[in-house]
Length: 85
Image (tube, rainbow, N blue to C red; front, side):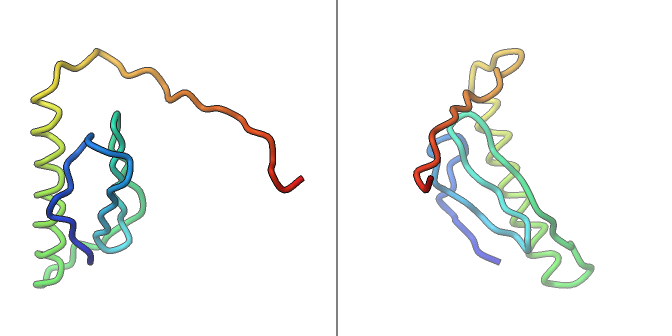
């Protein structure tokens, strides 16, 4: 389990935190959560649950501090030519 104590939601496009095989990726307009994690009934499971609780608490606090639109538009996806041919 890796930890990034300075993970600041919506502040950059670089931070990634892993909890088990769950990845929490930072973006300036969204947080992407993918993968899976087992929160086992042991000390390791408790540590992972606490880390997720902390991360999601920061996400909620960041969202509550913003003036949010009703719905975010989908990301602007651009197609580029294949540089390999």
